[in-house]
Length: 72
Image (cartoon, rainbow, N blue to C red; front, side, top):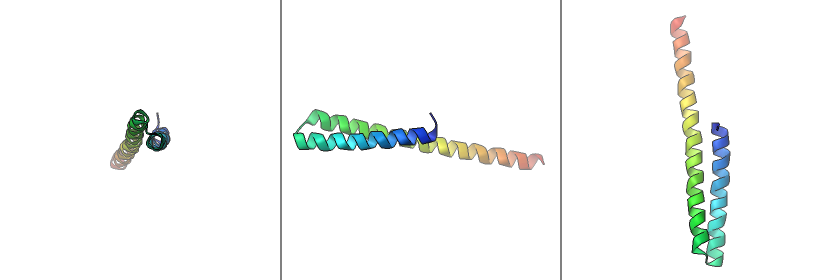
């Protein structure tokens, strides 16, 4: 997956997780609240993965540009 896809899926999972927690709170369902927490954490992890991919790509691009300049 690309970094943008990771971030989009992460945002979606985080939002769904928060919604599940709210519904679980409103209905008194500990199971649903727990599922919501897990899904929210999963979403945050996906977003972090997208950020890490962006950072790695930027570092590679900078290194490649520096190598091209050095070769000139």
